Image 1 (cartoon, rainbow, N blue to C red):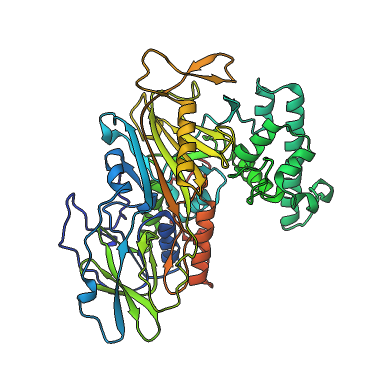
Image 2: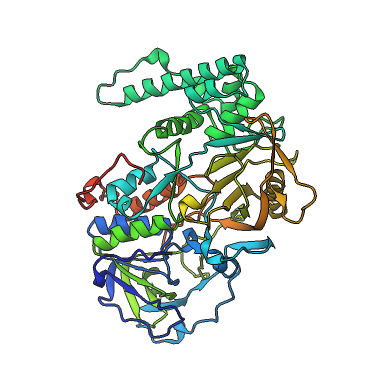
Length: 558
């Protein structure tokens, strides 16, 4: 992975060098406004926001690369990242501490479990880059894109569009997702009646979005009659879709492929996580406004070249330009706690150096020892989980398309499937794999580990055929083609489970882990709240914080 070091050499101290090293650099100064451990996306955005607000920032990471749990790593490093060896206990507490401070040892833990791989890794393995957060995309109109533009981070990362659009897996076939007026009328798989119903629905929603937007602007003028009534906005979205006459397949398109609902919305037993019409329309508004935002981006979604690990690097560059100090390969071995105030006031680095700070934010993969202090970071319930899969395949699931999103609605793979499975196929035009091969990422939220992994494996079996079957090729019906198409061959796969914990506040702060969603809205939302709790009077990454570049091109996805 390319490093995201700032241009000025005194902004980054890289403890790396290709081998484990014990000669850690000495950091000067030894006191900062904010110290962050871990260069995941939320920590990197926080560092950029704090630096833009004029705060002194020290940002360290125990790894020799940026990204932490949001990294893009070589395929050869995946096994050691998912199943790390236990680190030897540190002896930081034995070092001298001042009379007013206590040293509390800190240990990392693995957030991954139940790792299962199959197939042989194709050579050269270094040509494959794995995204730990996959499947993940950015909406063209997403706030994450706006933040990259405002902060200047867009000059450190390039994007390509998911030009193949979205496909819905329904009754054993893949159907194109009609997500616009043009797509509806060009879709050969839809009957005329279905086209009319779907077109009327989108026309109704677009009129509501336009009226609501007009009411929210400075004039306050909007067509109140075009708005959907409040009682309908508070309904479960699936009930509103039924009122509009959408048949089951069209409801699945809107619920899972456009509104991006995770859990079963249309079953006989309603789930606890039904989305409302208001929530569904908010996502549809984001989806529709993303189409056509950038002149060179097809569809609603874009993906960063070289993987999502480029995003933390981009924000770290922005922070470094504003004066933040970066030290890679520098673990935090202990926390410094003020005995009298029962408050964490700094960190002890692996070098043995103590760093003091006003605000301490640590990577969520660190374990916090039980202390006799109020701390709301310990959950009384089990953390959420997401089952993930990574595959290398021989050809595209959609002929003629490089990058494609596939949605498996609940119960489309088996009756016991309670949540949607999402699959994102990526090609070599994103520089994540060699030409002629494709990467596929899958995920589904789960409470039961075995059930979550089972859904991932079912989705893999539905789309790909095993490499060993030389004499009997599997087939996948592609509704848009009218003829059978040979399934892509599965060359290699890895299925595993990741736990999800929310960011914590209180005496010690931490950011959110990568969640089960397709985009970063929740991650950025919790990051903004965390920043507001630290600096309530400061603006979060204001537009004026971006450096001025002569070649600014804000209407391009690159």
